[in-house]
Length: 63
View 1 (tube, rainbow, N blue to C red):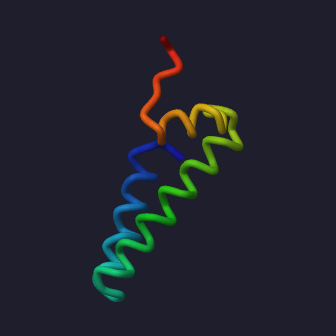
View 2 (cartoon, rainbow, N blue to C red; view 1 turned 180 degrees about the vertical axis):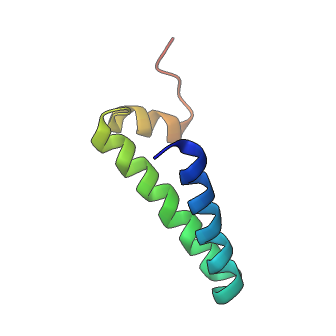
């Protein structure tokens, strides 16, 4: 599945959540989508937990 199609599906899910569930449901779906994205990247090995912690703290490991 290419990125454009995945983006369209995510946008449609957020749109349905916002329309039928209100703004709270929209935020919940968006937050859970972000968590799912990060977990997926961790499983694929694209990022590591140390990188994620540094990102949240604002540190740059590339220096």
